[in-house]
Length: 563
Image (cartoon, rainbow, N blue to C red; front, top):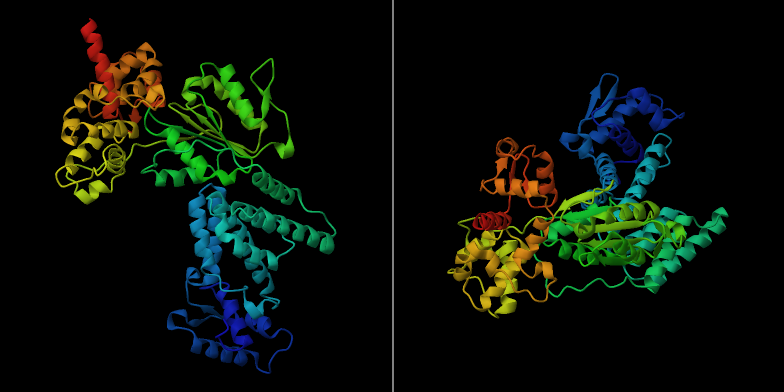
């Protein structure tokens, strides 16, 4: 607004811009611009200001007379003030809804429109003061919301400088100081975080005569705890995680809005790898650490409960599995608990629910072939890696996550192995036949030491004999067969029979078709098959991945040979 006329012309523009497209009466404009000191001919003086304003505005933003007043012919979203308001409020709402990445982008867009204090040299004007204050307060709320979004995404260090500048302008705003401390902690600058706390505490006592809030104290305590006691190390991956960036981003957003997130999917789909990578990348969100409890080797809920409570720093009630906190600093530790392979001890669900209710700062990231079934649980079905469609060009095949993983693991076995014009279609077909299941792709890639891709592809009809031999893996992942067998062995007889009936339909079947082939009422067993990640439902049809269907087919053949 600095380039628009004098103070009265800018005041006129500001008053009209407050409600674009709507008329403001001449009397209201005259009173707002001149107050009690009216010119000799107010109407003529207003017309003169309008002419001066029209001379500096572009044609599409004309000032139009409307009855007994004037209006600005422009859409609200074409005015930075209104567009900023819309984007800032939208970003705050998105953050509250757990859409962290979208909130960060929206708020970035809002701040791209902010050029300085609202209404600049007109902020003290009686008719503009409230609007200026409203916009400035909204901006501060948006600053804090964006800081929360960035910190949740592990990007808090990017805002350290801008947040410290904001705090210099608002030194008594504790909620802003909290975000500064969190961002500094995320950047590994705990010493500077202590300086910010001390300076804010001194200002509060000097200016307001009050001590720092509990929230401010907790922000410092957690930051110093994280610096004094680093997050316990999670297992370090020996291989790269490929093709999961979009999943990692979605999980980062979900973990900002839920306290129990369960990754589901069939054996070998990569749930554990995805969970551990997520926890490693987001570790700074939980100042008291990330703990891993592996349940695959545990056979009963009592033993599993002991491991879980030990990870939380809790003890068990001798008469039950319920958790009893042995410390209570601010409601408990702020930590992430990774529960791996919960399907082995589903009875642990009650203890998990109890721990979540007693520890308000606890977040649980679980992996399981079926849901835990706890109130508040958010499910994240882990998808297979994308495979190139038939007829893909070499570049498209190379860009596929499934092909990328196959090549990466094959090169570890045979140095120099690469995608060529001669083998890319074969490798793409292997990836499709194996449904993009990471374990299956890794086992197939291991065969390039002694076989060509064409030989591997020809033998996929006998994939369970071919895809074995991962000696470093836990037993359930040493072969493709054992990865699926574990889930099959947990099925009841009616569930197995229904799976074998579904095997008869290569392209899947509708509920009505399955009801015709039975056996009996299929809703309960069908639900169990979906929950156990052996059957997929796309909203209309039930189908199996080719690998799971091949396993079910092997059971049918086995039973027929016995008969």
